[in-house]
Amino acid sequence: MLSSCLSRVARRSVAPSVRRSMAAAAAPSTAVSSSLNDGPPSVFDKIVKVTIIDPSGARRIIPAMVGQSLYAACDMNGVDLGPSSCGPAQEKVRSTTWTEPLYGEGAASGFDHVLLQGGNEGVAIVEPPHENEKKMLEAYWDENEIFPESRLASQVEINDKMDGMVVYVPDRIVDDIP
Picture 1 (tube, rainbow, N blue to C red):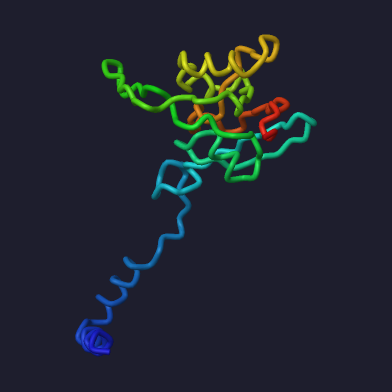
Picture 2 (cartoon, rainbow, N blue to C red):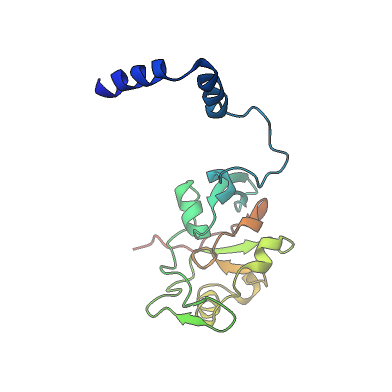
């Protein structure tokens, strides 16, 4: 109430020409930016679309946030990959001179096996599989089911270059027998 009274008094004491110039400065600009990089960042700058192909051949496009694991993106969108391989990668490359060891992390099972599209530039940026991930794939899957594109979904971090990437989900290992 007090603030509205003060603003009325302030409006009366300002000359009309000054009020018009202040209103013009406060009005939002109607000009459209010619560059996509202008303006504030948007949440859509951090979301990519990933196409999931299940074993029956059905395609499903899901949104994935940059920085999360492929397993988390699939889990949030109802794509069943089986049990997670638990933690993220065993080590994280922070720069050209520093690799941080993440103790207690890494793949603990090989159930969430996926095949990443080889030609996507985002796949080339992803860290290569660690030894632990390779061991889990070899322990859980037959030799003829593992390809160069084979990864564990919990070990793949989504990046902004993965927009439009295709992920094939092979037949699951039976994991629900008591």
